[in-house]
View 1 (cartoon, helix red, strand yellow):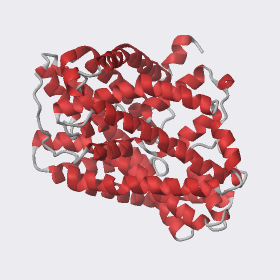
View 2 (spheres, rainbow, N blue to C red):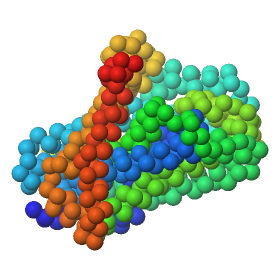
View 3 (cartoon, rainbow, N blue to C red):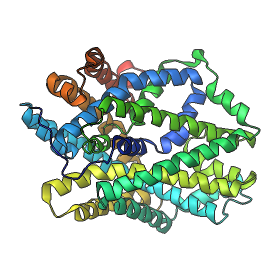
View 4 (cartoon, rainbow, N blue to C red):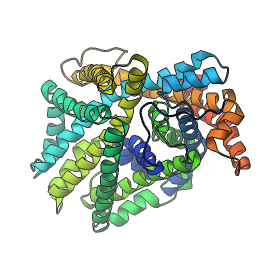
Length: 461
């Protein structure tokens, strides 16, 4: 069947809004610190070349597959897969792939909202001048004081979830679309402003050397794994977010063109983040390779020392909060869409129920850093760590793997071709199809084995 159906939740007003929304889903904390750090530590621009190759062979094929499923089904990931499976004469158990995505998004938002709360807290501290005269000890004390306080963690976690709930409950056009129309231009404006400031600093040339000097000798097996993992995880694949956003994409918009823009904008954002953050870090002679600690413990010291640091601190943590909120919206939407479709009761009620459940689990994640730190779900892992491990290392890679197999091998080629509208680009379609069938699943399986530690077990390393 090649029936064109409408989304029961509404549609984006244009393909541009879809691109902004999906880019907002993809852009998060990983773009603002992890990608620039990986570039600097793994061969500079040589890593960028490797990463782009991984994007073309893994990220782009699967994101096209997710959007194809979403727009063909026009429902939540669960119901889209169930509907398409029925129309294609396939086993209804393929809906379990949708369940994996929805559950993964649910679990990720539970701990992501805690980190999103940290971003809001640091934005507040920057606004009231809390970074002035900050030292290494006081920066560490500020962060430890936050995460060790149950009331503080729960309070900021609650505020973050209320913001995300309010946006998602308002619907596709009045909530999600209005939010991305405002927040994504703001995100890019703030980021470009930080880049312009970075260009005026003494550390700009050192930062460019750190990020852009190619060192092909630094590329090895671990680098390939890092590039593969970043290419997969950076695009919000396997968590139902891109699939449900694809369900709202107008029929006249090209899926390959739209997803190409998303991949490009996500990568550009990550590079701009490096050009914004590392000149400031190098200017004051601090260590750039500190991971999340760079954001919450190193940068506050920097903003307390440099010229216009108070203003830059506000700009940066507003930027971080915007990235967290746009990602949080996309993580909440799949479960809300499914609940409202399947059980009725309206979107607001569905959003309230799902948000409350996520808040409860997020509260447990937050408390696992302080009051419940002695409770372990898995050996040596707090509630926060356990949920992060299960969702990020198991559910996401498996979800991406099965999406590739479903679109590449199970859906009829004519169905996929019709949705992608490839009649003028048949050779490119065949290339994408075979990459989706062979290369992408193999690469994602490799990511899964590495993330779970099974790769080291198999190779005996």
